[in-house]
Length: 204
Image 1 (spheres, rainbow, N blue to C red):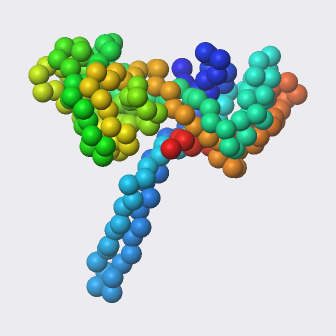
Image 2: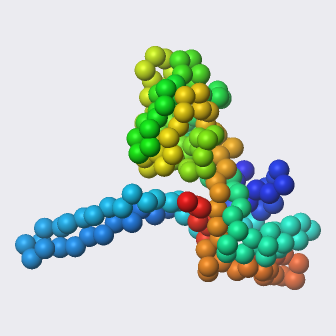
Image 3: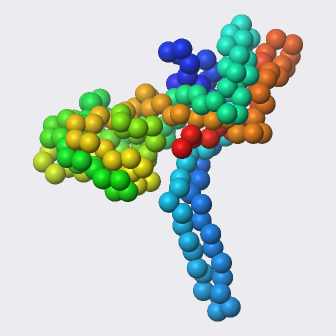
């Protein structure tokens, strides 16, 4: 179950339509010979556009949350996992890293036998020592000596040896509401609070 997480529970679930986008600024221009020149920045954040479940008897929790968070205070969501990756995953371990993964690297080495089963590519993960969300780009089946896990984007913070990471329905992303999201309440059919489309940005 994915949605806005507060007080140890989800106070509003995400419902379809839902889109998760990677915002990685790219500048492109064409020369007179029509050769394309591309410059890519290192910054990256995840952005979610979704609807929230209509609420009635528990609508006050979401209302207070949206008013108090506004556009400047961060909050937490449970990150939606790709359905295909979620169905393919067989690992229920608590994997940890071995050795230090340096800033701007795109892989970590896993401690031998810390992972049993499959962590498929396309899985969102979060390391325990910082809040950035990463996306795995290779399958990881079990972990033996030298097993690596690759991900996108490159590390924004170095990862020390022995660091664990979340990768199931427990990946929490720190977010902000975009400026076009209603900071209040909107009702349909008299008693159902329906916020319509909301846009949520990863806080980086």
